[in-house]
Image 1 (tube, helix red, strand yellow):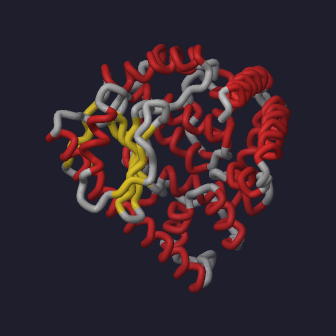
Image 2 (cartoon, helix red, strand yellow):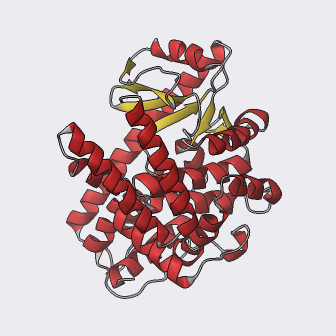
Image 3 (cartoon, helix red, strand yellow):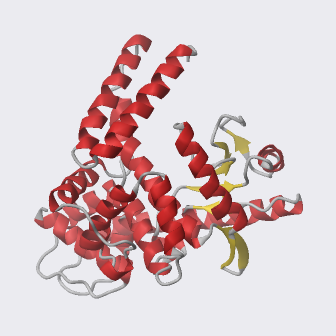
Length: 368
């Protein structure tokens, strides 16, 4: 860990847990904010910086930029809140009860909900109500569509100006048939049978069960880790769910969710990141922390290098223009990903390689 990374994590822990800053000496603010931007939590770090009163404060110019960024994030959230409440009210008037995924449901678990950054709203309605919900929301004032309403897709996309909402028929799109069946059972329990009502600034919303919320937040981060790059914002989300629900989780149920998707070893290894770097108390990490120091170190390096969606952007930037070369590029990337993943999670790497190749061959077979 570099000195700047050490400063970043000290600031992040202070912001997440609302504790005194365990840091002395001058701070490399440019380097720290570069990392924060890479991992999607500039508002968290920026808020802490603007409240500092000693000589470790950033320059006036940096403070101005931080405040501008925080203000933009707050304005974004205010608009999304209005869209969320109006959408839920409209769906309920039509007999549909949506369940809020990610976004605001996670921000409520932070010491200051306004500081968690996100860019859209995710509403789960399920397969049976999917077309009905899309038809209702398509006619909302100020909305226009930029996606397609299709049964084979995970969600239908709607934009309200620059503010986006995703209407989900499923919460995750599993490629592997066995995983799809296992996940469907988890989803049914967490989003239908045991969904909860919570107060969101005086307005009642449905959110997932606690066990599903913990599992899904990790599962979502895991898929970003596999495909596009995962940032500390997403890993902080997992830590916040574990902290908020500590002592009230059905651990047998949570364990069954994790094990049914073959993710216990990644869960235990990521636990090293949650505890050693993000600052989650070890007593609040279900099933403990079990990963070699070497594996946790390699995982840390990959998380820090790739950040929030950065691998996906790099893939798109380097993608050839010719279709034949695109296919070759995609297959080469599959094997590169396999070798990177195998350094930390060899069992999961072999499984993901098999699933990716099978999906790629099936796609080519159907001429897509």
